[in-house]
Amino acid sequence: MEWAEDAFVLVARRLGEADAVASVLTRGHGRCAGLVRGGAGRRQGPVLQPGNRIAARWRARLDDQLGTLVVELVRGHAARLMGDPDRLAALVSAVAVLEAALPEREPHPRAFDGLDALLQRLEGDAAWGAAYVRWEVDLLAELGFGLDLSRCAVTGAEEGLVWVSPRTGRAVSEAAGAPYAGRLLRLPAFVLADGPAAPADLADGLRLSGHFLEGHVFAATGRGGAPAARGRLVDRIARLATMGGGDRPPAPPDIRES
Image (cartoon, rainbow, N blue to C red; front, top):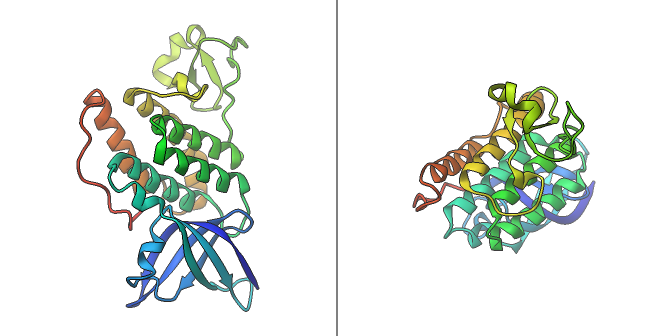
């Protein structure tokens, strides 16, 4: 069996002295793993940075084998974000979430297209944080756990939606949810409409999407819960919220580990 198409690197792990096993996301074949000869070396190592877009060729004698991957860099997203630790943390979180959430070799074209769009926004959009949260919400929908944010679950109202039920994933209006505010998840306005968001609102958005990713996606895959890379992004946003959006932490995360 053999296929060739563009892919995004999700994770690459060293195998022996020079090789690596890479997990990549393709549009037509989903999340696939393969052995990259020389993948830990000087020439191929930089190509296998998480988030990079590559031209990939996968080959195996049998469908159920690991297979081998031949890769060529198309766009080095990781290198372009090295100067911005917060955006880089979002990239690393996104690919780690996909690695943890997607079943192997099951096509999810919307997940591929969504990651492509997110990476473009991480490189050049001031509202990248809001784009990341909406990307997680969209991923939930792609995996069959979409939130119903169109109207209030109690009154049917389409305005004034500020809460989400942690049990049903349905929106609740401010008036209807007021008596139960301590038990509801906050629904930031930017989740409903494209636009920027303050760090405190981003923290609420990550708490919202994270609740349903934990309960419906990560718990079901049996891969150890939410990836550490997502936790590091949450911590970064929380620090920005505490500082009121002030100076960023200086040290970038290690993008080889997700």
